[in-house]
Image 1: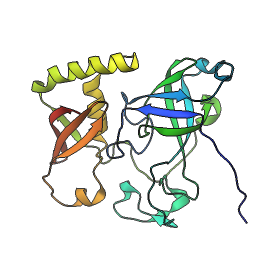
Image 2: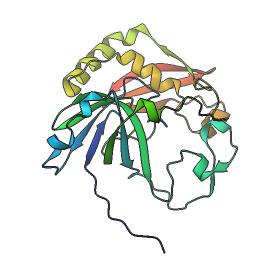
Image 3: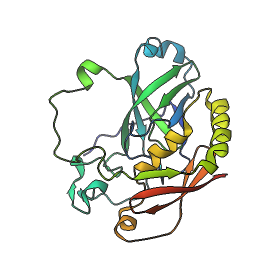
Image 4: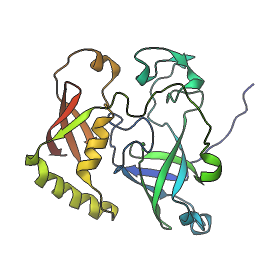
Length: 238
């Protein structure tokens, strides 16, 4: 009989992804994806964080709170394998026996109220369960191998952003700087997100010409995909 555990979150992630669509499938794939880990009900948080700023990267342990699929499948379709099935435990599928996620992110700022991180892959308001330092001498294994997924740039899209959107990009950059107290290259961040091709597999297999929208920070990225190129048509304030 399974052992029962009680888990309580230590805080919430405030991130640049209001919705699941467009959120990277792995952390660290898209520079410029900022997030804040905001602590809750932790009276001794200052003591808990002592020494954390000495690390460039941290592990976030979190809860897939937006999972709606109640059926657990033993085999799943990883997005990069064009429909081929793999065993659940050989994948990073979010639908797991216990919906716990693990992400390594760059630590930009450490305060008693929040952590500012980059390269986040969490939907806004995701519950955070734990934080651990990333240790380069043990967490990075030089002789580790994986026969799939293949090259990290496989299936990446080219991205086109017209010069007519430069003023909007500067305006949104200013808004982000005020909200996160950190500057970023927003044009590069948008390109990083779209290059990952966030479309569901079924839309990649057929020549759909519809526009797509990704909610990013406080605006929507409106784009279309043509000939393996994501073309940004507009940036729309929400």
